[in-house]
Image (cartoon, rainbow, N blue to C red; front, side, top):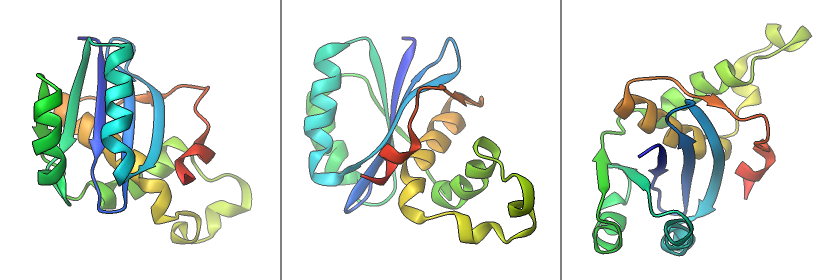
Length: 145
């Protein structure tokens, strides 16, 4: 399987990453409402059934794991310890500060609602033991849904 969908489950929102493992490239990155997760996964699975699904074992994951196990034969449950915290660091690797912004505290530039998709990326990178890069077509504004 060359494509992965990684999910960072949450109570109100979930981060979702779709990546091509051969190219080590993130194709899609979204933050969706938690109550839309199953519908989103069903739609993706219908379009491409050669996907590998990966879900973090953190916040409210047991609810999703139960439902997703019935839908997906290849669901992998992965460790997600400190993924949101580490997503803040990864944010600046992907989107480095430039110019005078380099001298300001990084914390003022990161909003937690942006980090769910990056937390899903951290979960996937930890599981696969490699780093991925972002596709040029990803619009980070979609992460604010």
